[in-house]
Picture 1 (cartoon, rainbow, N blue to C red):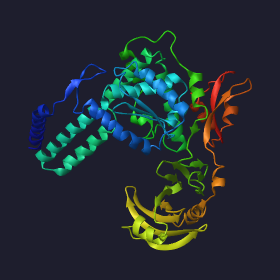
Picture 2: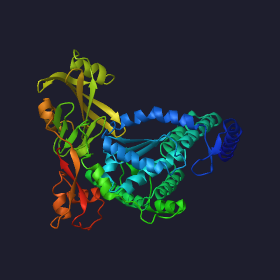
Picture 3: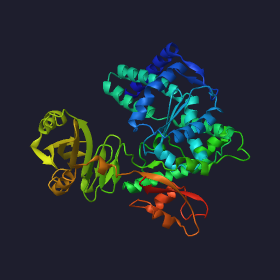
Picture 4: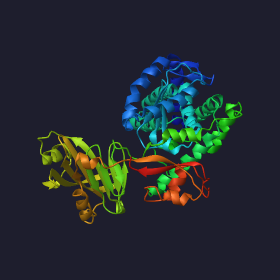
Length: 494
């Protein structure tokens, strides 16, 4: 009986969708591939959507890098590729987002975003062009319009499933799966973007083999990040280009074959021109978002500092700082706004801690600043956790918040560590904050006495200096330096 019902449900669902599709028909010719595509979004609507979402995406990833010379350089490379695409007259916009993640994004209407972290990792103009060409391919193939159309169909299918089965949870489950699938481009879309990207690279005169070189650097970078964060080998940051644009070397090579054409006789690589353009680029955390320096967090723009306990590793994001410690302990730090006249205990109980039962709540003072603290227990996906909430008054309406987290019964064991972290928080003067400078990419011409080890020792990295120097410069294991070549170093200060 169950098999019959499932067959009937699938049959009726298919019939319903088939009957509804003519009313929703939006088949059109794909301008880049020449094939038929389903689209319920016009090019004008794509442009409006891109203009609407562009500032949101930029804000979510930390704002823009506004160095005029660097922005012009990236834009010039991008426009050289656009001129060889099927949409040379589309008004493309190229933006460098102020984030150390290694990623690139395309929005409909020609909005291409490349991160500061990706620029630091690339080692030639051809590698940068390979990334930009791939994103341009997503735009010219109108993949965003296709994803939108798929989401419309997925919504129709989900509603039909719920109606026919009479089980609302079935619709909810299907919806979550559909949403997860639609968050990233399909494998077919990625292959199309690779194929189109290689085509644009070759037509613009670039060495398309640089795509494979950058892919190797990206994989090495992901492995290094996993090491630094103590994660299993092969773990990928979900914000990383490897996660949002999953690609393998064999797929890139197949795309190169599918693209047709030939590699230019004297293809452009442009290594020196590229690294000259990124000389002085901020590396890692920016002043706007604060710096992680070992166990300390310094914020030169907002005038404060604090230190996490021994054994805790910090990760800085646009929204918050997360420090993971031993035995499941963690510290989460962020900021909020509260009227300057408001008591911190009132804010803790009635705003931040509203809806939870706070015990041992009290007003305290942290290095001269009014503060309040309270304890609670919360059931999370990982199980029951003890939470210690601490809020400290900053300047004006600014408040700063620490959330100390441990498994049950561990809070007492971490009491001293959390207390030291609490009282390490200091507001500082503008003069002191001005001394905190970001790390930057600086160029060095290799001399006869230089080795990978000797140059890596000049970087400010605390761990894996040699490995990180190799990743930064696209050097394979065991590859030696050549006197006269230029390499990238990371230095601290202006």
